[in-house]
Length: 419
Image (cartoon, rainbow, N blue to C red; front, side, top):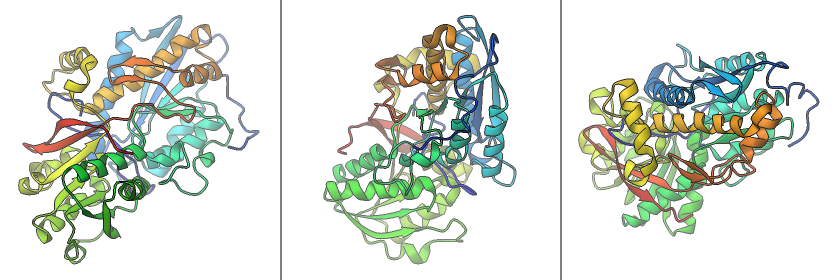
């Protein structure tokens, strides 16, 4: 989610209490298959996330989850010692999202490290559009805990021309994610609106990679489910307000496909004021405390009471295998609440470690590790049982429905989307 210079991603959510809350060949592929220097017994796993701005808390939760999973194996897989390095892909000038220049710098830094065996990131899909081609040329496996943008892995509706092939200059897939792509989220949003009795819906997006791509998926699903889309708009994040646009919102329901950092709070405030009966909906891009908590600059409580959100994370009642990890998380980090990004950070690292384990004695060989990653099948994990398909997508399809209670996203139920 979150975007400035490079538009952004689908993501998960932040600040939930007790819960789990987007090819041609290249002869320059000179590092693929040699992830570590010959005979090296130390491998490095890098994390690249926005550690400044509105995404900082979610990113820290991801890092804590990754560290917890690594600590559970004693920082070792077989004969290999695993070093963990956290990188910041945001800047003071571009906080809360992946800055294009900084993200490229992170990826190049990792490429120069012969011990690099995994790159966990980015948080934002727009960031991955920058880092993925650089890492792909070096054959470095990459896993995102939060990307949902569809064009990173497929050319399905919602993608842009040339996607996803342009992100894989070697012609070989090196990227995977542990959350469902936006084709699923678009269907989940529409399914929810239809279940809530919506016949018409106003659809706006924030013009980012994530927001515009998800909006196209919402449109496609709406057509399939007989929901009429009205007043299709793109919003300018630099606008002081959206009162003029909002005055035209006459639909039963309103859905904004965007992220908090693109002036999402003002969008919802103005639409709610202009249409006092419309039901309001948002994606994982706004499912965070910066959007939901009025005490932290989020939407007013009365607007929150009308708003529902979709997130790829499910609640504890629908993730029974996560309870043990939640307990460890609370004890390790001395907290009574677990941000859902912590759970997906944990699983991202756990998947990387499992891939290294399955690569065995060749865990320092990037080609072998990639084969293991894409060979993931029926993995029993804290987020459910899933496989990684040839595109790099998880086979998980369920989405969570969240309402806003006491300023925080609160899990309601699992959505079985009518895709």
